[in-house]
Structure formats: C-alpha cells, structure tokens
Image (cartoon, rainbow, N blue to C red; front, side):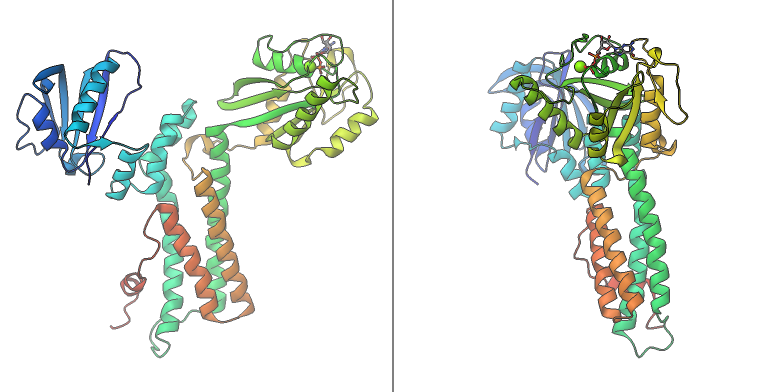
Length: 441
Ligand SMILES: Nc1nc2c(ncn2[C@@H]2O[C@H](COP(=O)(O)OP(=O)(O)O)[C@@H](O)[C@H]2O)c(=O)[nH]1
Ligand SMILES: [Mg+2]
C-alpha cells in the first residue's frame, strides 16, 4: 500500500507532536531522513536520532518503529515523536511528502487496520467513538467496543442465520439426500423467531447505548410565565436565561448543557407559546414549535398554582405523548398535590423530581452503562433491516410459499449481517454449507 503520513496529535503548540507514517515504504523513506539505520527491525523498536532534509537537521526525534506484524494498521508503521512546534511538524511531514509519501485521508490509518484484518468494522467505528466520547461512560463503552466486545455479541447472531440458511440451501441443492437434515417450515419459523428476539434485544441495547454515548435533546415548552427559563437555570445551576415577571421575556431559544447521572443532556428553553402581534416573538414561537418536533423529550410546563388553560390543553394535545413529560412548576404557591403528577419549584431550586422523571422516561438499564452495544446509525439501521428480512422469511415460511423464497430473505439477512461486521457481502456460501454439514460422508 502507498505510504501515508499525517500529524496524529492536535495541530497546536505543545511539548511534543506525533507524526504517523504507514505503508510499504515507511521504513525505506524514514531511513533516508533519519540519522541511524532502520535495518533488521523485527519487533517494535525505539530509536533516538535526528531527522534531516536536504542535509539540514530538522529536529532531534524519537522514532517508534513497528514492523507490519506488530503495527496497528497491519503494515509497516513509523511514528515520529518530535518537539511540538507546528513549524517542525510541518517540515518533517513535508520531508516525507518529498520522498514519495502522501497525506493520509481522515480515518485512513484505521481504515487500513480494518482492510488488513486487524479489526472488524464495528471495532474500527469504536476508534472514532472513543475519540469523540464526552463522558466517562461513553469512553468506557467505546473502549469495550474497540476490544471487540460489541462485535462478539453480534457474531453469534450472524452464525445462526448462516446455519439456518445453510440448512435451507442444502435442502434446495441436494433434495435427493435422504440422510441429511430436512428443514421444516415450523423449524425455520421457530429459529427465525429466536434470532429476531435476540435482534430485538440488541436493538434495544443499541438505542440505550446511543443515549448513554450521545445524550438527549430536551425542549422545555409551555405558556409564557410558567417558569420555563427558571427551570433551565435551576437545572444548569446558573443564570443563563433571563427571567422576569413579564410574559414574553424569552424570544429566542436558549441552550444549555448538563449531565444527568452521566447522561449528556442538551436543554432548550423556548419562547412561551401564545398569540402574539410582536414579529420577533412570533418568530421565537415558531422556533419553539420546531424544537417540539426535533427534541427527543418535550417537557411541558404547567403552573401548579392555577388550573390548566385551554391553551395548555391545546399544547399538550399537539405533543407526541411518547416523548412528553408534564411538570407542574411553582409548587411553592400551591398546597394541592395530586398523585402521579410531577411537582417542582424552579424558584426554590427544587427540580430533582424533573431530573428523576427524565431518567425514568429514558428507561435505561444499569447494563446500558456497562455493556457496549451496536449504537450508531449504520449499526442500528442494519440491525433493523436484518430484523425485517428475518420477519419476511418467517412470514413466508408461515404461508409455506416455497423454500427458495424463504431462503432468499434469509440470504439478504445474512449479507446484511456481514455488512454490519464489514465482511465481504458476496461470500460463496459453499464453505459454510460444507463445513457445517457432512453431505458427502
Ligand atoms: N413562586 C414561583 N415563581 C416562579 C417559579 N418559577 C418561576 N417563577 C416566576 O415566574 C415568572 C416567570 O418566570 P420565567 O422563568 O421567566 O418564565 P417563562 O416565561 O416560562 O420562561 C418570574 O417572575 C419567576 O420568578 C416558581 O417555581 N415559583
Ligand atoms: Mg422564558
């Protein structure tokens, strides 16, 4: 493979910088630039010396030399640890470029690791998640995925689909063999249902894992003056939004971020919803209505000290009930507390019941903080597609439409499974069939 080079650390002035070089000529090019020999290196080795270009020393550096078998990309890798000035780092990179290396594209080192079989696609994706993790739980989960724990949950599902498919294909290809297992429709339906159950729990885990990693967006909605901005401030523990007794104070969306029990939460305080002749306020109200659609959770705020108005009822009706939490604010002004309702007082900074309601709503199991899962868009999308293909196979088997039709849906599920792991989706199934069944005997 072509030799690629890139700065692996941030492009900032710092104590040290790391430049990574990977490819067939990584050692040959480095030898031309480095003051010492890089011959006969057969294990990870550290070398101290200087890097020069056109006869001029650029810097005193340490090279970390990894032969292909021991490197993260599966090809020869040299890492140059130099002094952390961008001038030095750029000169070293330019020296490599001048000797025939090229700039690496984003993620190209990890892609090479994947292409060289050093990691599967799910592990490769975890590298990115790890870098982007903003909470400790997210970091821990990514690290576990990187070590193969998420892939290993899915591999058995893929293998079960393969076995079922192999069973059907054997029936189609060798119907005359009497001593091989015969697939009955009932058996296919039963096995599809079992695999679908397993997939459902993987999808559920993935959805929870996604919340732990990426967090949720919560919009606070309600009529003017119910205390939305006060709630935002109380949750954030700072006076971020302006609070006054004048209805219509908040006109634009005010955003804040916090973490509730380790889950990253993005809060949106919105303009109170009412009829308004003020152009600026009307635009703000439109934004509130948009936030209602895009948020993962809507908190509708009602005033505990007065009965809900017709406007409140209207707003509640327009919110998706599966993502709505209703809270009664200003509980300090009212003595009436009805069972099952959530009362808070933003003024007294008593917003714990709302935090708990948010956690309850998310319905996260303890496991979602500890077990890695298949949680990005690509992974969840493929899991859902595999589920649908198996559902198709199962319903075709139920109708007894013909084994080849059932088999084609299963084949689709199998190819999608391979795609999920980043394996070649056009594998010849023969190997799987004959390694599982002793047809020839
Ligand atoms: N008594 C009481 N007053 C509150 C509470 N929360 C907010 N307020 C008052 O209600 C008024 C409107 O608050 P604000 O947060 O601006 O409401 P918003 O228009 O919904 O954003 C202000 O005078 C607040 O001090 C509360 O929990 N109890
Ligand atoms: Mg407000």
